[in-house]
Image (cartoon, rainbow, N blue to C red; front, side, top):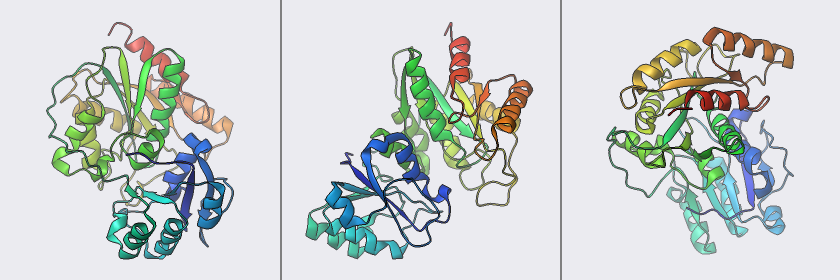
Amino acid sequence: MELENPYLIFLGDVPDALGAKTGLGIVDWRREWCVGQWRLDGCKADAGLPEMDAAEAARTGAKTMVVGAVNSGGQLPMHWVSSIVAALDAGMDVATGLHQKLADVPEIRDAAERNGRRLIDVRHSNEKFATGKGTKRPGKRLLTVGTDCSVGKKYTALALEKAMRDAGFDADFRATGQTGVFISGRGAAIDAVVADFISGAAEWISPAAEPDHWDLVEGQGSLFHPAFAGVSLGLLHGSQPDAFVVCHEPTRTKMRAVEHPLPSIREVIDLTIRCGSLTNPAIRCVGIAVNTAALDEAAARSLLDSLAGEHNLPATDPVRFGVDTIVAEIKTSFADA
């Protein structure tokens, strides 16, 4: 899969920033690839890019319009079709991370054919995955896990990749979601893999490596989420992590899109170790990553200090305060490994 940049980021009319997390994530980590954003009336997300439609973006040099909005179930809203057709007519490819394939919509398929443009469905891999084997393989792996969906697992893994490389580690981010694939240019959207092959896909994403190499595997969902726990468990078994970081959003009381209460960080640590030990008995937690965006700095630091003391682990906000404390814990914990 090769996407041509620069990108036009299409945000549609999503009701909040979480609905635009694909587009916002691309901008956060690859802003230099993005020429502008296209928002429809009522859009409540803003990536801070110049506003433009398809024709304006094409004149600016955009090569691909990325549908940077997501929704529950990953289906394409039909009132977005005309915008996608306009991008194709303007000479751009169109890429999406939705579950629904673009070519399944006749108007989009016809527009791509008449303009000779590509439709890129990042969630649909051409790779044929095997079932998971659970055999220990060389190299080291870290998985980000969560108390819920959309709590910063991808951002934490990307921040760890950068910080670990800066500290001299041989480390690579491994994408398991559509936004991560857009950012890294490789990986597989694990939630689109047939259930029997999820752990095998995770083994493929983080293959055997040199003993001191680290794969930073992007987590998905939560072991406690009634909708997505199956994906989370398969990813845990297949990635076979030596280490994991728990990601958390402290202002939530219920899990996203359901009525179930948010689990505690301790519950997540204990269940991750219990389930993860099936394929790696030495699995251990090395830190807590907290999204403190809703807190002022004093409250954020107070919460992080409290969590660090409670769990005897480094606790930080990767975006706000960096991840050096977690990297130091990794260095100490695996010094003799």
